[in-house]
Image (cartoon, rainbow, N blue to C red; front, top):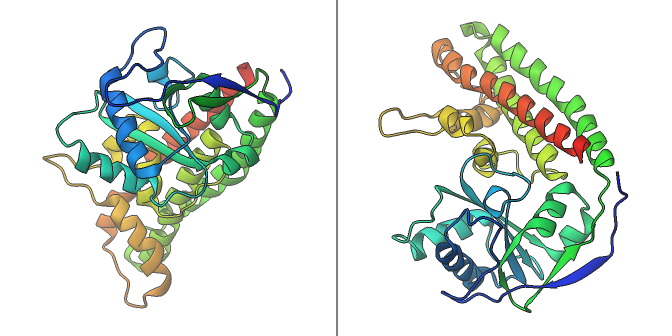
Amino acid sequence: MGTNQKHMQEQPAQNILATTAIEEPKQQSYDPLKAARIAETLAELLDPEYILLFGKLADGTPHSDILAYDLLAVTDGPAHYSWYDAKRYLKMKLPYIGHGAQYINLYIYTRQHIASNNVPFFYFARKEGIGLYSRSRKIARPRDGFDFDHAASVAARYTGTFMPLADKLAGYAECNLDKDHVRESAFAMAQAAVYYYRTLFYVYHGFEADSCDVRYLHHRLRTLSGELPLLFESDEYYPKQTLHCLNNFATYAQYDPDFFVESDELARHFDPVKRLGEIARRLCNRRMELYTKR
């Protein structure tokens, strides 16, 4: 394995307007005009240095497992709006265009944050990403060479610390679903879900998630597996409230003396949490295997 290189090289990129040319992958896996419109609209809101399309649609190292625009917007300083706000903005500005993909998975980070987090996530995105927008017409690209052995070791240590803790919490929740222990079961279940999601985030990104809100974490990670939306997102026939309830459990089971939930309802919420643990473990192992093979 090569050791990590901190030196950067400059690579030109197109500054996109609505219909101008963009960098194209070897095979055109996405709609260039729609991608251009998305990038242009995000640039209006965020004023980034550049925006990259990475992952599957860029014919790079996969990030999202389902069809999604994986986008990295790099800014000079802290953005005025979060990735969630930016996605809402896209829906308001481009309500009829369609994206060519069901999901947009947007990351917004400063140059300083990227420079201080030498992790595979930023390496893949900046090394392989397709430039959709650049304010200065140049995009800083990392040189060849990255210490993937170290990345795999760090990810394995994190997983080995927090995945067993999540499993213990989930096991405790399952063993205490009776009506006399619903408070303890609900709280343990909620914490298990948070640990599963935060471990998954760390293995894929190399740094901590910035929230313990399970709905936020799900929305951030939902594209990593097509099973995650099936577990927790409502459709036109079956409303699902598990994520909302888990957040309530995390707060009210801990602090509200009047907290109560029926055992049957608690058991219904436990099943997707248990499945979440299985999915998170599989995805983490797959990602660490990818690192060791580089």
